[in-house]
Length: 75
Image (cartoon, rainbow, N blue to C red; front, side, top):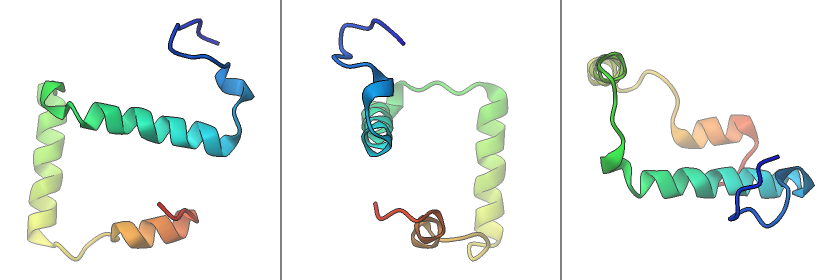
C-alpha cells in the first residue's frame, strides 16, 4: 500500500466498516472544497443532461432513502 505519511496504518489492516468510513470521510473532505473541482466539457454536458432529465420528470429514479435501503446501509 501507499507510504503516505498521513496513513498511520495500512488500509488493508482496517475492517471493512473502517474502510467504508475512511472513503466517506475522504469524499466529504473533497465535497467541502467542491468549488475547486474542475469539470471538463463532457462531464459538464453529462451533468446538464441529467439535470434536464430530472427537471422533465422529477419522480423518475429513486430517493436517497430508497437507495440506502436497497444497499442495506443506514447512513
